[in-house]
Amino acid sequence: MAAVIIDGRAVAKAYKEGIAARTQEMIARGIVPHLAVVLVGENPASQVYVRNKENACIKAGIRSTVIRLAQDCTQETLEETVSALNKDASVHGILVQLPLPKHLDEARVLRLIDPDKDVDGFHAMNSGRLMNGQPGFVPCTPLGVMELLKAYDISIAGKHAVVIGRSNIVGKPMAMLLLAANATVTICHSRTQNLAELTRQADILVAAVGRAGFVTADMVKPGATVIDVGINRVDGQIVGDVDYAAVSEKAGYITPVPGGVGQMTIALLLANTLDAAERCGC
Image: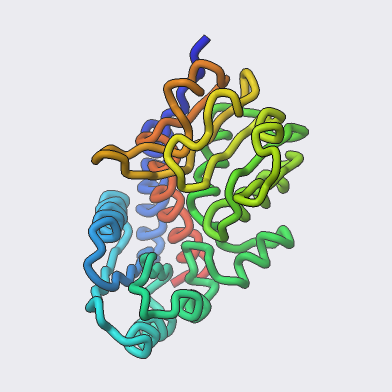
């Protein structure tokens, strides 16, 4: 029996409608949520991502500012830009679009963002808050995965969750969120031995490895929930980390690519921006 398709578009649409209503309520109280995005260079994918974020803000009623810097801008210029946004009381959320050109120190720039405006959730302080179960900003993609699981009433507590990938953006925070929801969590990566043996134990399998079609049907437990975070371009098409056609015949639930997790990432970015504005109260 084919898996139930987790419709990220539908869930994100409903979620964004709630964000728009919340935004209007905040504006009525004199709080105008404001997201500032810093874009360096002309990376085509980054241009698309930033445009999508800007459009989502506009539709939700959130003020959006995009600061575009030249491809060859200096580290000093970029840091001065971020510092100015930190000091600007009208800006509630700051996002530096990644990846940055190779001559720039990405980690140093992310450390410079005010943790209370770090709506991407990449600052070490917010990572520490997540690890310790304290309030803070969580990276939008894993947070979006949790909202998809919630929307489909997929039980997490007591289940075995396996996360393939250990990045600071998806893998590690994903594992922490699942652990906080009382799952037993295994993190796998490029050095993991007997990977398929571990993935076949998963009630919830999250693929965030960045390799097209990496997860095959023989790696999946019958009836498992399979979450595909991958975004890969193959012959001009966007595909995930999961062999969707084969795995969807074996899994219980599955996210498509496109139309799955990616739809939720921007929705949670908007939610984080509203949270930042609420905390600021200005």
